[in-house]
Image (cartoon, rainbow, N blue to C red; front, side):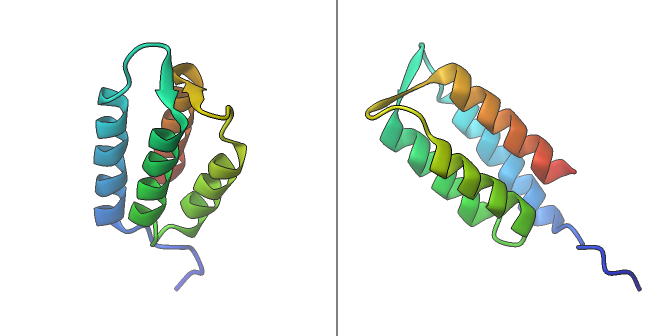
Length: 88
C-alpha cells in the first residue's frame, strides 16, 4: 500500500461539471466579484475530499482581483487551472 492520495472519482466529476456550469455562465468582459467568490466557494465544497484542490481554491479566493467586478479572462483562466488541478 502506498501513501498516495486516492482521488475520489465522484468529486472529480462534480468539480468538472461545476466548472463547466460556471464557464457557461460567463458572459461579457466582467463578472460580479460576489458571483466569482460564490463559484469558488462552491468549488471548494465540491473539492472537500481533495485537499490539494481545496488549497488551490483557497489561494484563488485570496487573490480574487477587483472590488466589485472581476475580469472574465481571470475567471476563465482560474476555472481552467482548477479543472486541471482536480484531474491531476
